[in-house]
Length: 213
Image (cartoon, rainbow, N blue to C red):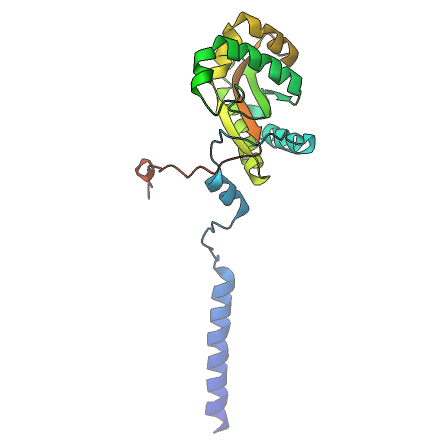
C-alpha cells in the first residue's frame, strides 16, 4: 500500500514542479491599461483656446521646458532652441500691434483677449533654418504639451502668428527680445496656461492604423 501511495505523491510532485517551471519560463504579458498616467495624459490632451487670467508658475514652465529638451534627436544633436516668455508687458505690447493690424477680426471674436489664443504664457520653438530639424522640433513640442497636460495645464500649437511675427515690421521689437540667432527660425509657438474650457475629443480615424502580422 505504501509503495503505490509514494508513487502517486511523486507523480503529483512532478506535475506541480513542471507547472511551476513552465510558469517561471513564460513571459507574463499584461494588457495595457488606460489608467497608465502617460496614456491618460495622451488621451486627455486637447487644444485649449480659453484660459484663466493666471500666468503659469515659473517652476512649472521650467519642468515643461526640460521635458521638451529630453525629446529624441538625430545623433543627440539637440538642434532646437526654446524661448519661454513670462514677461506679461512684452506679451501685451506685441498683442497691441496684432490688434491694430487685425482690428476687424478682433472685433468679430467676442472671446478675444490676446493673439496667443488668450493664453497668459507662450513657448517659442525654434530650429536651424538649414538641416531639416522640423521633426525634432515636433517631438520636443509634443513632450512639452503632454507634460503640461499632466500638470493640469492646457496648450495650443500656433502656426499662423509666426507668419505675422516674421512679416510685420512693427513686430521686430518682439523678435529682438526673443534673441533668436539669425540662422534659426521659429517653427511654431505653444500657447500655455490654465484651461478655462473642457473641449470634447474629436473622432479619430482608426482605419489609418494597419497591423502587419
